[in-house]
Length: 489
Image (cartoon, rainbow, N blue to C red; front, side, top):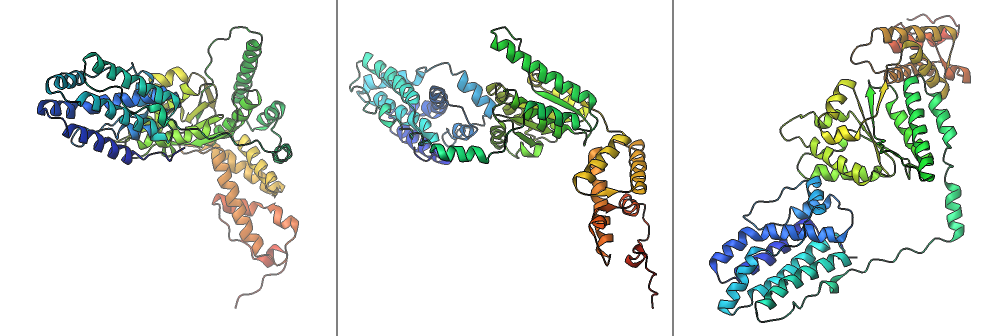
């Protein structure tokens, strides 16, 4: 396999080959016509060549296609979804009108212009086939069929010369043989190193352990049951109606959307819907670039990592918020929709964000409306649930609360909930409060003369008050240990 060409190399070889041919055309009117029409013809040939390959089209082909132009002519600016649609819908090879004029000129002037054009076509089509470093059997077959069709017209007109000396089959790339399988002992060792995947029952237990989210838990269980029964019906040869498993998560930040998405990815894997079950989390900045073409590449790279699992797009409404004149969020959406169709059996997309803004996002594109028809609503945590989350953070991280500290934390989180505004962060605010409390505790413990395990674990009411901004002058280490304070001089 050869090293793939760069778009700049494709453009250079294309311009040099085509320009040299045009300069050799003796008829000035035909030269002008070719200058204006060859780009469109060869761009169409590239589409046919890539369709004949049958391999998945990558975003890199956008740059290759946009490199097929002569200096002075308009530079193509096709987008990834447009290129994919054009390749899929390629209507078949059509002899260009200017080829008839070439043959007519050859008859009058007794030249070999048309035959040389067949050679040029074969070279350019092979250039397009080789952009990925491989000329496949399908691509070579397409090139030869088209070249033969052009040569047959020359034969029909009685032009001198025969079949083009170039045979595309001579350029077919031998694909590397698959690597030899690893010895059974090595395979067994690798399998033993892997942690056992959680069972469906274990994953459902993890779901039940989440604080709050009663409606979401019920929705998840219902969805899992629906998929399980569908697979059972398929196994019995019974019909199943079409079903989209892509989801919309609605709610404020910190309500557990990412956690539930990660669990869903594993659940789908456990019941055989997804091949891997990984979660790839991203937002607008991870999908959108600053200029045409690069957004498609960036988005495709993220999607490729997510195939086999779940792609979770947080604050997805930012993709269609039209933040400026040169906004390429819509390009990311088009790439996303194409991949959701191409990989519908092994890719699930979850989009998340504020309820009102997500409604605008889904209705901004008919393709989004048709693919996202299941909505999970994540309600805000109340004060009691926030206290449960705080207690859980303390337990998991090895901190303890005495009665006074626990009562203060509960009152503080109740007040936080009652006074919430549009910036309310739910569990994120709880985590911030916990991290501030740990920092305050560390400052206090670092000043103690003697420290035992209990002191390292204890979060006191004073620590929590300082974390909440309810500042008190911290006691001296001596006073904290029951010793009389030392008089200051």
